[in-house]
Length: 226
Image 1: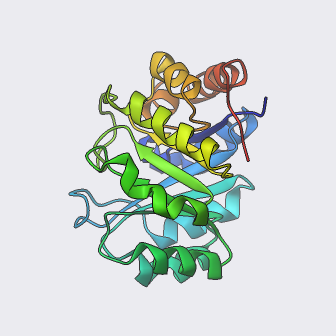
Image 2: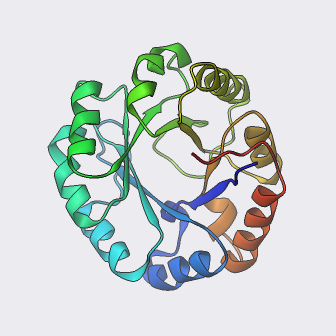
C-alpha cells in the first residue's frame, strides 16, 4: 500500500501568522499546502493570489498545491508557476479549453490537476484523465470554507477511482470540502489519496489536529500515491 497525503488548506489558517501555521503543519507531517485562488467570478468569493504563493514558497519546502477557482486560468498559469506552484489544478468548468490549460501547466513545469464541481457528471472528466496527474473532486460547492460534505460525493469518488484503475492510469484523486474525522476515512476507503482539510486542521490546535489527521491517513487504506 502506498501512502495518503494531507494537504491543509490555508484558507482556514490564521493569515496574520501564516509562517507559524505552515511551519507547524510541515513539522507535523503534512506534505502539501493547499492554496485556494478565487476570482469572485467563477466563485462568489475572493481569496489568495500570486503574491501569497510567492510568500509561502519562501517559507516552506512543502508541495504548493494551487487550486485555481477562476474563470480564465490560462491567463495566469505562467505567473503561478513562476511564483512557486508545484501543482496547478484548474476547473474543467472554467471558460478556457481544458486541453489548452493542461498543455500550459505542463509547459510551465508544474504537475497538472483538473477539478470538477459537485454538479458536474464524473464521466465528463474522463477524456482528460490520461493527460493529468490529479483529479480534484469537490465534495462541497467551491467558494466557501466550513461547508458540510455532500454525501453523493462518496459514490463519485468510487466511480472515478474504478475508471482510473480500469484504464491503468496513474492519477491521484484529491478531495476538498467538508472533511472531518468521519468523512476522511470514507473518502480514502473509496479511493481518494490526497486530502484537503481546512477548518479541521487550522481551527483549534493546529499541531494536534494535523498530527491526528496524518495518523488517520497513515492507518486508513487503500491509499495509493502515484
